[in-house]
Amino acid sequence: MNEDLFQLGIKALIVNSDGHILLLKVNKEMLKGFSGDPYWDIPGGRIHRESTIEETLEREVEEETGITNIVSTAPLVMVLSNIRIPRDGTDTGLILSVYICRVEEPISVTLSNEHTEFRWFAPKEASALLQVKYPKEFTEKIAVFKT
Image (tube, rainbow, N blue to C red; front, side, top):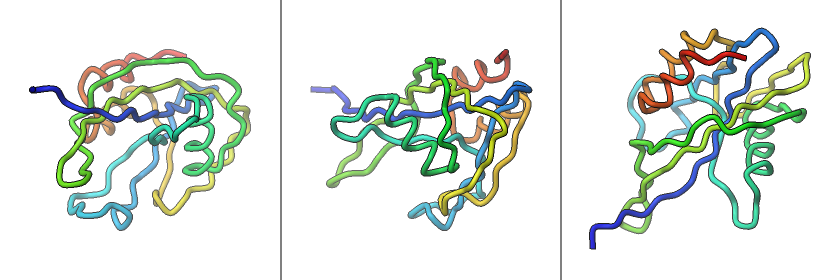
């Protein structure tokens, strides 16, 4: 049997009224076994048992950014990540489902200890920065993203 197992990660592409995308710089002290340079990411996490996608987006966005006023969400892309999640002597793959999240303005960001910095980037710049972690099919969609 050559089947693989996967977990589903939900990610929020938070876009402001200027069409800029919120990126968070990862706190490498919070990543077990990580030895590389800090990189830019978008908020997100895995779905908890009995949670919906919307609840997961709301929870993760609030935990990582302090933002509580998501006014709309829309699916953007689902991609197979190159990230493997170790568990019980084996690992599972990760599928990322990314949603565009619009939030009420003004937007106030309060970072969790998972991140050290936040900034708003134009789509092409955000796309380039996210290439460190995300597959090309996702970052290409970000590069041409229009509000």
